[in-house]
Image (cartoon, rainbow, N blue to C red; front, side, top):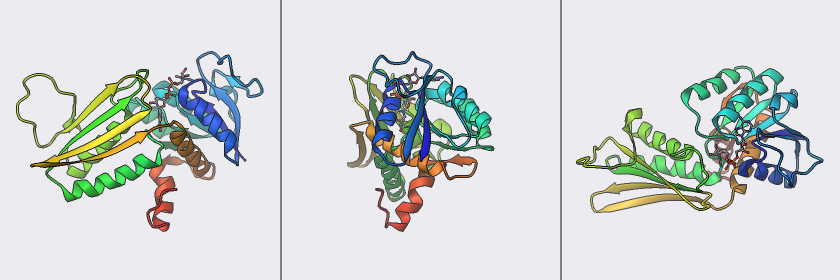
Length: 264
Ligand code: NAD
């Protein structure tokens, strides 16, 4: 039985992880952690803390969906208590990432800006399309609900960095929105555009445009359960992993290879 502590338990994703873990055999949610007050409809049988350090024990797996500060605090608490960390929060700067990297020297940490199978498959497809069409322009458009805090999404950044690195462009090739008389689009540019409104769970479209034709690779997350299931798969992997910094690909792609590329 894998003992899960959910950080960001009052949030949209935290609640979905708790609900999903209850229906997947092999997981027991030990506690919820959030700096916000305990929600009125919280199950009183499930312990609630405002600091992960108060509840963690060696062997627990923290599942964090709480943003940059939550991820950093969770990483420090995991390091102190010998717990593993699945980190899904986005909006981390390189100094936040550095804290997680340091913690991963003593505990197992897996970070992903997107725990859906569809995005993992889209990233694989994008590699193939980019190599087939080396000179086509790349633009990324993402849509999220009006309460999302960080822009562009962590997933859009991941896709943009994938494209920049496949093309050999520098990190400064990412162009976040456009306004004004900018002239001709430079060839070595990856456009990234964030749309916010309503209750969109998350939509990412990578557009590749060439002379007289274009391609769009599009992923639509319709339900947060897709991310919750992926995060729990990552938790299962980390429960048996050595200290280190892992990615979602480390969990799913070796299996996908042996099953002929299928992501289940
Ligand atoms: P949300 O605002 O509904 O929930 C976030 C929760 O985290 C809130 O309850 C907040 O009080 C809590 N929190 C913030 N800082 C904290 C801290 N320092 N300690 C404890 N709790 C803290 O947001 P959400 O829609 O659930 O998304 C949460 C995060 O997960 C965001 O960064 C979002 O971009 C990301 N996300 C990632 C994936 C993925 O697959 N990796 C999928 C969806 C959302």
